[in-house]
Length: 480
Image (cartoon, rainbow, N blue to C red; front, side):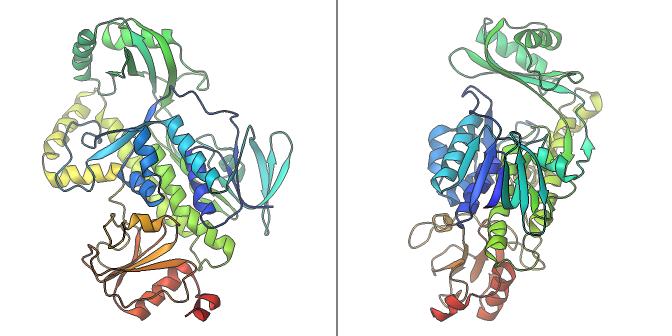
C-alpha cells in the first residue's frame, strides 16, 4: 500500500512527489505517456517564485544550466516596459518543457519516488481508510491518498464529480517551430506591421534558421485532439499577414485554446487536485507551469504532515483555502491580458492607457509581481505586511537561507539568539544569526518559504509552532 498515488507525471506531479519524499512518504507517480515528448517543443518560462523554489530545493543550478535568462520586463500582456528598479529579480528563465519535465522527474526519483509510465488511471473508489485506484489495464492499487495532477481533462477530477466552471475555448492559437524561406529582414518588417493591431502574432527567430510561430485562429477546431498541419499554419499566416513566409520543415506543431476554468474544490475526502487538473487558463504571461509547481510545494508538506499524524486541525484544508484564491487571481489576470490583445478599437484604447499607466513604477511593479508570483500574501491573520508573504533569500553567517530549506522543514530564523523550537526539532530547524538581513527580530518559515510568524517571544513562537506544526513531540522534548 502506498501513502500517496499521484495521477500525472508532469511538472506538478513530479514536484509533488519530490516534496512528499522529503518527508519519507511512500509515493507512486502514474503517467499515461510511455515516453517524454520530443525535445523540440515549446519553451516555458520559470518565473521568480518558481526559481526561488528551485533554489530552496537545491535545483536552481540544474535549471540555469539548461535554460536561458531573459529580462522580466514585458511579461504583462507583452506591454514593452522594463522591470522597475528594486524588483527582487530582473530575469525569468526560458527552458524547453521536456527538459523541465525530465529535471523534476529525476529529482523525484533521486529522492525515492516510484514513477510508472504507460499507466493511466481509469477510476477510483475512496473509503474512510484510503483509496482504491483502478488502472486502464484493470490493475487495482491501494493508497491512503490520491492526488490528480492529470491535466485539463483530468480523469480524477471528473470521477470525483468536482465542478469545473468557467468559460469554454472560443478561439484557437496555433504555435510551432519551423523553417522559413523568407529573409529575416522581410519577416521582421512584416511581423512589426501586423503586430501593430494583432498582439498575439509573432515569428521569432529561434536559431539555425528556425522560427517560433504564433498565430491566432478565429473559432475552435472541431477535433481538439487532432494536431494542426503545416498547411494550417500557411493558411492562417496568409489570412493574418498576407504571406506564409515560405514556412516548411516543422519541428513541432500544436494548438491551444483560451478556455478558463477553476475547480470548485481542491479536496474531497482523500482525493485532491493540483496543477491543470484544478485550473486552466490561456498562456498569457506564461504562468501555467509555475502555478502548478507552486501548488505542489504548498500541498506537499501538508499532506505529509497528515500522513505522519502531526498535522494540526485544518492544515490539509488550508491547501484549498490558500491556493484556490491564487488560481482565481491568475485566471483574472489572464482574462485581462487576453482582452488587451484584442484588435478591437476599445481594447486597443485600454491597452494604450495601461501602457501609459505602467510608466508609474508602482503600477508596473504591481502587474509584474502578479505574473512572477512574488506578490502573493496568504491570509494568516492580522500582522505586519511580511506575514503570509514569501521571504526572499538572505545571506547567513554560513551559506544562505534557501540552502537551509532543502529538507522541506520549517525554519526559525532568529536574530535575537534566544529562541528555540524544542518539542518540534523533528519538524523545524532553528538558525540563530544576528547578522541576518531582517527588519524584524525573528521569523518562522513554513516549508514553502512563507512567513508564518514574526516576533521575539518564546511563548508566542510556541503557539505558532503548534498552529502550523502540530503538538510538540515527546521525543523532541526528551532531547532537551
